[in-house]
Structure formats: structure tokens, C-alpha cells
Length: 115
Image (cartoon, rainbow, N blue to C red; front, side, top):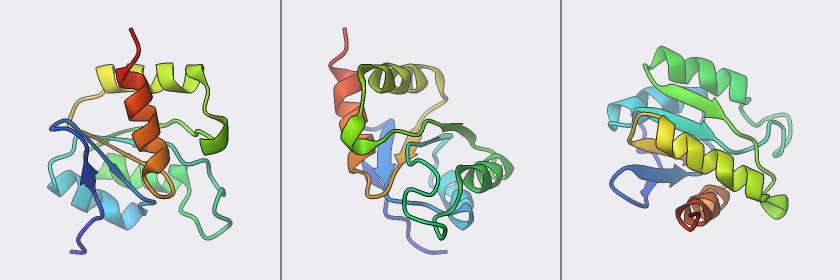
């Protein structure tokens, strides 16, 4: 099994760059319980795995999954609030991914600063 490029930010949350359906069994094996997909479909062109395909594989691996597409250059307060809600309600640990992991990191940092 390939080593996944997972970067833990806390004991209960980590980020990763673009993952594929084939990565989901490894995510589950690494102990994660939920996946948040923050990358909009086709942002990287037609070769990018779709959220639907990754979600199907995640569910088959026993993971909960949420598709929350966020445009990195246009992140809104509503995006941050939704992300914070997902972190509160999804079983942890949670892994979020986007193109590089930076957008998920920024969402996480912003969500931690909410009242």
C-alpha cells in the first residue's frame, strides 16, 4: 500500500493533497473515521477524481464522507462555519483534502478562531 501524504494538524484532524478512490482503504487503515472533500470537482481538469467516485470508495471503506467544495481564493465565512460544523459532527479523527492541503489547513485555522 502506498504511503499517503497525510499531514496531521492535531490528534483529531489532518489534511492531505488530492486523494483518489484507491486511497480510501488506506485512509481507513490509518485510523481516520471521516473524510471532508474541499476540492471542487474538475478544478484540476478532467483527470481529477470526482467527489462522487472518492465518496463511494470512502463509504465502501467504512468512512463517513462530506463533499464541501470550497474555492481557495474565494473562501467565505459560510464556508468556515460549515467546515467547523463538520468538525463538530463527524466522527473523528477527520481527514480533509483539497489540491495541496493548504485550503483545508486555512479552513481549519479559521474554524478554530470562531466563537
